[in-house]
Structure formats: C-alpha cells, structure tokens
Length: 190
Image 1 (tube, helix red, strand yellow):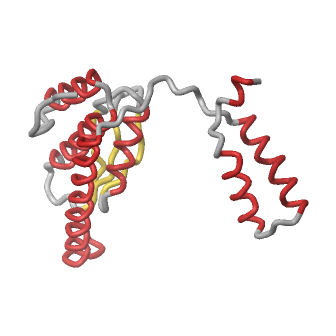
Image 2: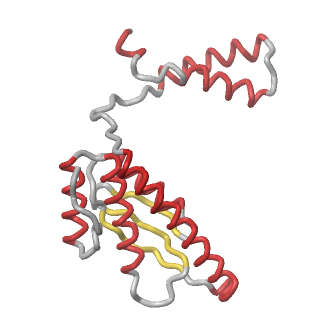
Image 3: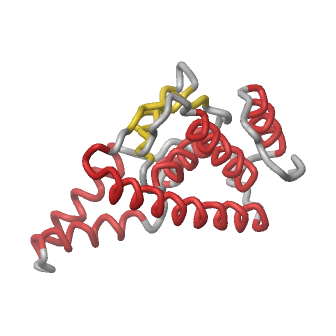
C-alpha cells in the first residue's frame, strides 16, 4: 500500500475534493462524503505513472526560454492581428509536419504546449511512432512552410536546454541541424 500511496501527489486529494465542492457549490456533509469517495476512487483508478527521470532545471536557460516565449507571443499576436485586419475570413492556414527532436515525454509535451500557446499555431497531434508533431499554422501565404517548422524546432531545442539532460540537449541540437533548422545561436552546453 505504501507504493500505491506514493503514486500521487499529497496535494492532489485535497485539490480534487476542493474541485468537487466547487462544482456542487455546497459544503454539506453529503457533498463532502461523496467528494471523499469520488476522490479516493479517482486516485485509485488513475494513479500517476512513476517518474522515470528527475526534472532538471537550468535557471539561465529557463529565463532564455521565458524571454523567447514572450517574444513569440507578442510577435505572433501582432502577426495574427495584422492577418485578421488585412485578410479577414480569407486568412489562410496550413497543417505542417514537424519532427520531434527529443525523446522524453515531458520535453515533447512541454514543447507542444509552448508552441500551442502562441497565437496562430496549435499542435493538433503528436505522432510518437512517426516522430512528428502536426501543427496548424495561421497566416501562411506561400508554399514555403519552413519558417513554421524551424520555429517549432527552435522551441523544442530551447525546452531541451531548459529542462533536459546534456545528452537530450545534444540530441535535440543534432536532430535540428540534420533537418536544416538553426538550432541555436549559443553554445551547446549543459
């Protein structure tokens, strides 16, 4: 039972109970008891998978990722706004295939979420067997979709540099270069 208890965060049970109470908008005894039962059932039926590798955090690289993300959000917002004002409903979009540069699920999902956060782009599907993302990109008016592909690959490299191991960083940079993307303007150091 001890191993089963470690498979969820100690704060998850109170959080789920709080969500239950907020959904019912009541703190009556029946709501609380049913919330405890539902919380226990959810935690037992859907335990977390064990973490296979620790989360590495490089503060300087994380600040670089945050700065890049802010720049990406602002520039994408301006571009989408301009496209909406200029083309209106005739704004064109495309779905592009972007190679996955890292192997760890946390890094793949983090990069996909950060790509999706920017206005005008959205990761539609992560195809692990084929090793690619499918990204919906707004405002593409030429057959050249490479800027969108390279932008998504740069985001993956930045995520790997902020949270990955030295081997994961090297792998991401090498894969980005093999696909012709500018991996980084900085040294490939862990």
